[in-house]
Image 1 (cartoon, rainbow, N blue to C red):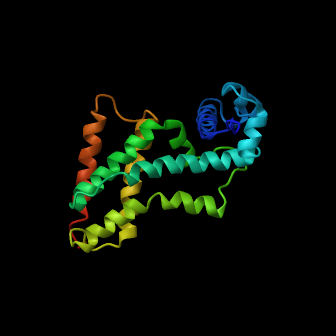
Image 2 (tube, rainbow, N blue to C red):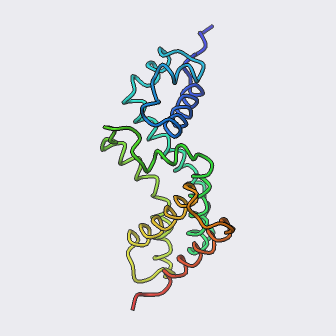
Image 3 (spheres, helix red, strand yellow):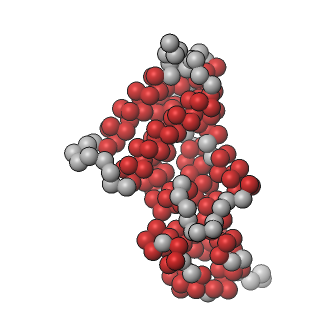
Length: 199
């Protein structure tokens, strides 16, 4: 009978989640492999076995953040209405940020001094936005979105959603706002805006 695998995917996910929480609360100086192992109830040997060291751990953390984010975006089903699809994708973006706030912070900030994603990691991260480009292109192909290239609409849509999510997660929105309702209203307004050719 084969020996059970001790350093499995569940431990890997637990270590990545704990590392993200530590970076969020204690900053990069608070993240050591020894402390991470202790917090996750495992050994430093397990951490090294799974990741090979701190630089590789940070790279995997970056990729895991985008992987989970991409998974949520890719599950948004097309309705056949480009406006509705763009709104649904924006809502999924917000849901992803709320579900994994520590990982969301890692995606768009400097995790640790000296960490820079390599070319392959950057390529994988950008690939998570493909559902947005695909939905926008479908809107152009159907004739609903006019006057702009898919990349222009996608970038503007991403910037709008990212800005709103960042304000919400940073506690920077005015008091008394129904955030969910306002978020959807703004998404619908900007989606309808792409249906009019520029003057």
